[in-house]
Amino acid sequence: MRIRTLSASVRRVRNSWLVPRLREKLIVRHKPADLYELVRDIQQYPNFIKWIQSLTVSNERIEEDLYKCTGTAFVGFRGFEERFSTHVVGDPDKCQIDVSLDRGPFRHLRNQWRFEQMSDGQTAIHFLIDYEFRNPVLRMLAKANTRLAVDRIMASFMSEADRRYGKPSS
Image 1 (cartoon, rainbow, N blue to C red):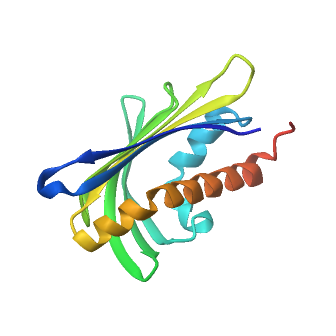
Image 2 (image 1 turned 90 degrees about the vertical axis):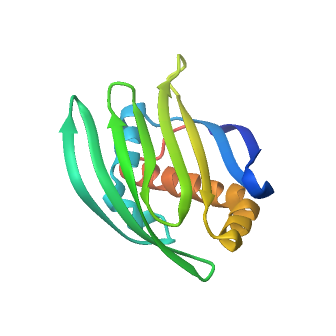
């Protein structure tokens, strides 16, 4: 069973461009620790997220119980191709992963995944994405397609979770 709550908002920024920001809460039957490991395993993203053509991981380390790395992705979507790098910080105790921009086509990029064990044994996935492209054409495309992109990303992660950990019974 998957239950969704959405909170999509748009922030007004300089030059009156609209910037996508989306929060989502998804209820699933997979374990928080399994979902944390799945999202943290960024090197495998090209195997299950179709528009990530390649991804390399560098500076991988553990500091004060936090997993840290830099991920550089080459993505292609609807005729556009871009390369960008992010800093990834995973906190296994909080079951939380924070992603921030290192370099690339964005003015800013922030992404957060948090996995919360619920009293009924299910897991709440708290997802946030907040970004702005530098290029005005990409900015407009992103604004029009953020919901679709997030839906596809979530579907890709849930399919991969089912594949790795087994499909939960209802």
